View (cartoon, rainbow, N blue to C red):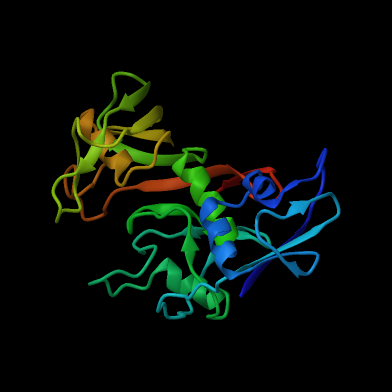
Length: 274
C-alpha cells in the first residue's frame, strides 16, 4: 500500500474530513481510492464523515500501482531537476518517451527505470514525440502524478519550445487559434478542423536565416503535434517535418526548453529550463 500522511492545520473550526480533503491537492480519483482502501484519523479507521480539527493526523491508504513491463536499460540520463516528489529530465532526439507497439528503439522510460534501479512506476506528465527533444516531467508517486496531470489538463503548465520553420514569417509575433483533430481513426496525422479540440499556439521569430526562421513557441494548449500542425497551417512547416512539410534526411528541430508549474506539495512555482 502507498500511504499519505499529514497533520491537519489552519482550520478556523472543526470540519468534516470530506470537506477538508476537497480543499487539498488530492484529486477526487485519489480520494475515491482511499475510501475503498482505508482512511485513518489518529490511527482510528474512519469514514469521510469524521469531524476533524487542528492537530489531527490523517492517513490515507492507496492501492499500490503496478509498473508496466518496462525493461531497465543503462542509457545516459540528463537530470535537470529532482526532489522527493518528481524528476525533470532532458530527452534527446530520436528517442520515444514510452515503449509502444512496433517500436524497438530504447525509450526514455527504459532509461528512467534504470536510474531508479528498476523498482519504479513510470508516470510521465508530458510526453514528447520521438524526434522532439527537451524537458519531460515525471512524477514519483500517484498523488503527485494526479495533481500535475490536473494542472496540465487545465492548461496551467507554461511550456516553451524552440523550432526551425520554413521561410520568413510576415508577422514576427502571432497567435494561432485553430482547432485540431486526428485526420482519421487509424492515422497519426492531425489536421485543422472545425470539429477538433481547441488549440492555441503563440510564436515569436527570434532569428531569420537564409531560407528559414528560428521561432520561440509558447503552448497555451497541449494537443498532439500542435506546433507542427499550426506552423504548417500558416505556411511555415518545420524544416524537415516528414508529416506536415518536406521530408529532410536530418529531420526537424523542435525542442522543449522550459516548463513552469506550481509544485503540488510546496505550492512553490517551479521553472525548469534547458
